[in-house]
Amino acid sequence: MPFKIKLARIDNRLLHGQVATGWVNMVKPNRIFIVSDTVVNDALRKTLLVQAAPAGIKANVLSVDRAIKAYSDERLDSLQVLLLTEGPRDMERLVEGGISIPEINVGNMTFEEGKTIIASNLSVNDDDVAAFKSLNEHGTKLSRQQVPGDSAVDVMGLLKKADL
Amino acid sequence: MLAIIVASHGNFAKGILQSASMIFGEQEKVETVTFEPTEGPDDLLAKYNAALGKFDKDDQVLFLVDLWGGSPFNAASRIVAEHLDTMALMTGLNLPMLIEAYTVRDQDLSQVVPHLEETAKAGVKHLELQEDAGDDDDLL
Image (cartoon, rainbow over all chains, first blue to last red; front, top):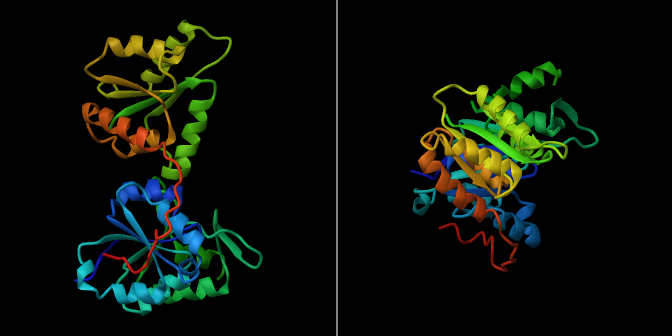
């Protein structure tokens, strides 16, 4: 039995107020995994993110490969994980690597040059679209829901509406 | 579900409600009462009663107030004093307190109050940089 994922969330701000307070209170994880190959190599950002974890919940910053390896580590069986990635591509790599993620909570993906806005605070580039489609083909449900009080919206529907 | 009244000097109460909705979303049965510079205690009582009128008769009501001893506190405490079995009042309103209140609204007032007191205090914290924090080798 691998660790249990209580919530998998895509959010380019990773661990911030909506997550550390809103979602943590909602899903009550006992561990936060921040999965990002960039952050793992950025000592300051890593330190600050780990400090932003709510009291009593440990946070780890992991590379994608390490997260996949950790999934088969039996010593981590008791973990109830809130798992964060910056974008859908990392989530897709986790699923490809064998991690079972039935549903992904899609949070903030901030607009940048070259991205298409498909909902408020949700913009995608070609690679994001490809990653979302691949996740959808894996049977992963993609739910747009910024904060617990929002109602969930299907991301594939949003992509279709935007002709993507 | 607990009904909540957030009260303050000036617009703080409205502002913190909007901040909390960014973190946790819109909430039902949450009202604000703001005390304006030209107003007196009777205005406050009227505003509190108008807010209470929006709740159901059997709702438990939690007052989250900015300052101990201020006018919003004084007026609210007069109301709460007459309904001690169904109402409670806390001061030192802050964002962790309000958001936590949203997450424990299904519990009884008697459990919620001490819990929120703890959460609000824990929200005051200073940044300390620990060098080995975030060591990704330490997953256990």
